Image (cartoon, rainbow, N blue to C red; front, side, top):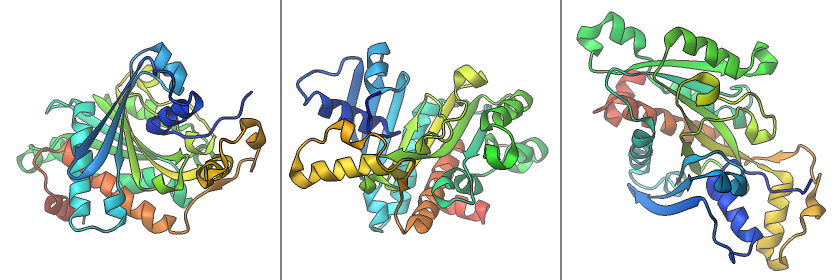
Length: 302
């Protein structure tokens, strides 16, 4: 089988496809559009049919990529703008009614920093289902939200999909939001990019350890996925660096098996994962509960 660069980002899959045909062929079944939200670049990729699925190796749906370089540069008001940029992209994917119940799922292993985006985002997400039901006089304006951290198969003995399916059958949520770490092809996108999509997610795909999928087909509920790339495959990184150095295209065969299962992550990954997880949690809170401000979320999560 031909070696291919590993990425979980639809925008990068489109880049890889374009490079493979040297941009001489139109990409059928895929639409792409560049936008700006609160000062952040946004790319929307829509996979429309089976032709697009085969070209990008991703299911039909909408994939939104938000670039967060301003946040990493600590620009003024970058966090606030990032929260509302992500909120604005989430709302049309969620399509929630006021009475809807949402289950937020933090996927991954909190003990391994590059895999801790899901659990750390869950920590910043407001669980309100019990409050709305028990104290409607104070929390009646909130949406019912339940939050769970699934852990990983190696420590729980259960697939994340099994855990989510069992909880979903009990709670019967109207939407599921799954948060997980992803893989990118480029180091400059690690912890600087968020991908949102309406097609669900495969836990562990970022490190090539694919588990059972979480999507509408497996759970019976629409699943919106939020992902942040925290690692780069060693072979993919080496191939891209060689090409960027001006040495021309690299034959795929030269990198087949290169690095084995080795992945690369920045030395500042602890701080970067903490920052982006807080951003995701706050954006989720503002999307799930209309009218919340950053200050409101600060107070409610403190």
